[in-house]
Every structure is written in structure tokens, then in C-alpha cells.
Image (tube, rainbow, N blue to C red; front, side, top):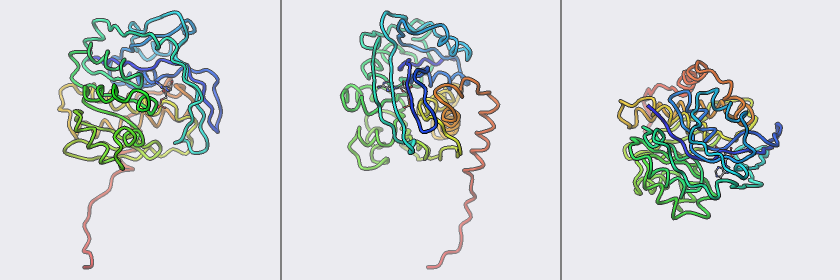
Amino acid sequence: MSLTVVGSIAFDAVKTPFGERPKMLGGSAVHFALAASFFDSVRVVGPVGDDWSAAEDAVLHARNVNTDDIEHVPGKTFFWSGVYGWDLNERDTLDTQLGVFETFKPKLSAPAQDADVLFLANIQPDLQREVRAQAKNARFVALDSMNLWIDIAKDSLVKAISEVDCVILNDAELRQLTGAPNLIKAAQEVLSWGPKAVVGKQGEYGAALITKDGFFSLPAFPLADVHDPTGAGDSFAGGFVGYVAAHPDEEIGQDLLRRAMAYGTVLGSYNVEEFGTERLQRLKAAEINERVSELAKITHFEDRPVQLRA
Ligand code: AMP
């Protein structure tokens, strides 16, 4: 089976109360690919500039991520810079430079078009739609986005959403996108546009899954040391979508998606332990299953009804 992802391929400059990195490998597609690489063969689609070197490719190749669909073009690689305060759920974007994405026209190779599962990671929604149109055989397509695109390209984003099976957005983004006052109403509105599942990410508070026939929620994995949340959402998506990709024979309903939520939660939790892609680069497969088992224990409770006073 195979998984194609389009999204930003970037250099990030990030500052948190626990340190800073002036230039590190990042981008929504990169974070997603590293996380999803534990589940399936992943291909990354997108452009990079002259400042991209073999060292960045090597990070992806070390996890067997296929880079044949990464286009090398003259110009600068996408650049994003952000700063976090003590509340790591809040961040300020200092700079976004689209660079080579500005003129990018995706043209997927035959194997990328043939992907079984497609993830439209955060990037301009017109690009997401162009890639969606080329991956005709995908049995599951999920999408992420962010406030910037809701602000400046909402119509295109709504169209993109109507063409996918699953939407993965932050709570606040879901409310901003729909104008609904809470997560449930916002998710119901998004479901009415076409997707069969909505995941509302809630940062350090976890994530919720809403489908037509059910609701499920998991807390974030409790961590005492968080250094940099950049890419947590994309790593979550990599675990979640990767898990779905790894189970081609199972019906995509609440059962499968609940387990996918656990894997998303765990990949997101490893990502935030260190800066950028640092932790995922040395993550071991066994660590993932271990943490999923721990998460299952943490969230388990027995329903023993008690005789209540009238
Ligand atoms: P996350 O923390 O999961 O929301 O994702 C962080 C990653 O998103 C960073 O590595 C950035 O390079 C990337 N990013 C930031 N802004 C944008 C944007 N406007 N479009 C696409 N990717 C972005």
C-alpha cells in the first residue's frame, strides 16, 4: 500500500521558553511523512529551493520516505518562523515566506497518483485541490489547514474539504471556519459539506473524533517535559492517517478511527519532546506501541453504575 502527502516542505525558525533553533527542517509534509513512515510507504510531493541540501533528504531517506516527487526549483524553500510563550498551546507566527511554493504546480508521478491513501497537509488549498484531483484511486483522503488559509482562501478551502473523507483541524480553526460556537456544532457543519469524519485537535488537551454515528475523545499523552510543539498536529495526522493506511481491509468507521486516534496522539506526543523533527528522527517502532498501551491504561475506566439518590 502507499501513502502520498502534499504540504509544506520547509525550514523553520522557532523559539520556545526551552530553547531556539534559527533554521531547522520542518514543514507540514515533512512532519507528517516522518510520523506516517512507521505505518506505510510514504511519498512527499512539493518543491524545495536552492537552499535544500542532501542532509535534509537524508533525514527523510533514513525513514524510507520516498522523495522522488520533491521538485528542486530555483529560489528559496518555504520558510516559517514562530515563537511560543509559556502557554505552548499559543504561538505567534513571525514570518511566512512561500518561496518556491508561490509558483508551484503539482504534477504527481504515476506512483504518487496511484496512492491508496492521500494526505493534504497544511498548504494553500488550491494546491491541495490540484493534488486531490490527480490522486484518483485514493480510498481515503484527509486534509489539514490553518487560520491563514481560512482568512485568505476560505472558498477554496471549503471546496477542498468537500472533496475529502476526513478533516483534521484545531478546535479554534473549526469554529473560525464554520462560525459555529462550539466543536460539536462546527464538526456537524463540516460533516454536512461531505467528509465522513472530523478530528478536532486541542493541543495539550488532546483530540476529538466526530463522525455521523459517534463521538470519541482522547487526552494528550501526559508529558512533564515539552520543548517544542511545532509539528505536533502534523505528527498526529501522520500517526492517525498512517494507521488507517496500514489497515486496507478494515472498514473506515468508529472502531478503526478510534485506534487511529491513539496512534496519532502518541506520534504527536513524541514530536513535542524535542525541537522540530529531532525526536521523530530517532524514534523506534517499539516505543510507539509501548506508549499506545500506556495511553490505553491511562484512559480506561470501568462503568459501574451506582444507586443514586433521587
Ligand atoms: P503544526 O505545528 O503541526 O501546526 O505545524 C508546524 C509546521 O507547519 C511548521 O513546520 C511550518 O513549516 C508549517 N507551516 C507554518 N505555517 C504554514 C503555512 N501557512 N502553510 C503551510 N505550512 C505551514
